[in-house]
Image 1 (tube, one colour):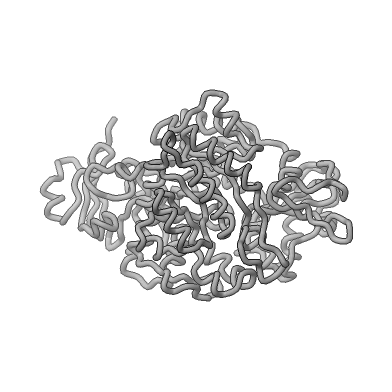
Image 2 (image 1 turned 180 degrees about the vertical axis):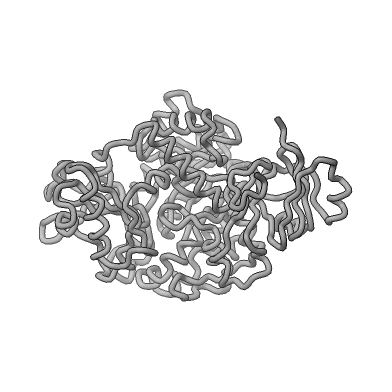
Length: 540
């Protein structure tokens, strides 16, 4: 049964960056029917229409999370939370791990996510020995907030067969000190541990998918992405998403990105018959991800100039010829390329590979290939991206959570103009703001705050000239995300004919001080005019 039309009025409606503001909108049959002045919309409103009074709040296009890891986020909701908002000391890390071990059967895995060694009081990673003391009877693996490194305890090392003579895998590092393992694994070396962690079954994955979607819906999102499908449970993740959708347990629209490194599932999915664009607007399989480097906070993003500490320029995941061959393969298969590259040297490696893959037989035009993160790039690299329509998909919230660590690791000049949102917009790029959750918080209002202020969580302002207006920031978080997913013709703005994916916010974010953005919430989130979150039961 089709719901009655819905009139939203009594506050401002943000149509989009080009359309500006309206006084009211009418939703009918899941789409925006009319938007304009209160009088114009009232004149077109039929009898029996439901009404929502904004009471001074604002309605915007629902947020689009263009780069996150939805299934891992959902699974992580049941893991030990070590994020820096709550955990700033080594003792607290160990206390939480110990408490989880005390409540778990002996021998079962204890998994933790989100610690930031730079934010801990000791200024370093926990060690295997320290985790052993906290959980002597359980294998433990904790992952740094960036997701590019983690620490295993002795029980995990023994269970996984990793010893002091185990060689570093290609694109990975096993840390040793004095010939002994510290427990720290970086980049592709993490597979030596992860491959031994029991995979979640389908029921647990479906539960996690739904839980993550509902969490995002409560924050104003109606669309999201799972950026590396297959790296937790292989091809079974594809089936879990399909089951979730069929069972009505996929509240968000999903743009899916297959894990494309050799240990990923992209080739197996291709061999099974999956092809680019398979699915529908609720669950679309459109892209493949390949890693080129690591993280700037973890000293593994690849740069031309060395870090200020550690005497390193970072880690390339693959040698040039290997990553170029992967980019060419997936481009010619027809996938959108969503390639992780943070440092300028990694971005250069990726750009050269993309340029080499662009051919008369397989042109780049219209493909909307993406460089994920794309944090530290040169003017020439921006120019070459623009020339081929290669899109940056950045995480401004990295500046909020890791900006001060960037200054420590890279120096002020490089940090000031990392994630250059204003420059990208001014040059005609379409930067899709996102969070990389669970690497960073998925809270969109912290991301908006960062885009508008360029302030870190310690109050340091980095590159004030790269700050956006609130309208520009919302544009990056809505329309630009839809553009990267070939969906700007149906979502990302609140213009007539567009799908009625709408978020009603607790305050008019265009009228408040930037410092108060972090306290805003979503009150209502609609997907095609149907509530997927309703904080105050306004449409009950």
